[in-house]
Image (cartoon, rainbow, N blue to C red; front, side, top):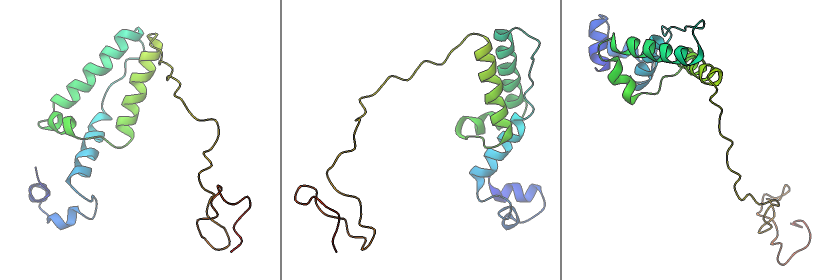
Length: 139
């Protein structure tokens, strides 16, 4: 699919489409997001069954539209439809007892390295070398 083919189907010029979207990738992302708004929630089901129902609904939405599943494989949706889908799935997983694992602590330094002073406010020079100076820039 190209912007030119879409414009032809819409009986307009491709330049007209660029008024609304900057490129084909953004158009795909918006199309996908609009379709994902149709994913159905089943809040009355038990948590695990609810997640399965949401995923089945998502699959149905993608496969019922020719080409949309292929677009979904290579496109990150942008907008309220994808955000809603993420929230539904995360809520369902939390209700099902899935808990996020804590991030492992990394070896983060507790103090800032003192290799160089920040830039001088007065003259924008890099500042004095702390190895040879004990005070602020005097420029």
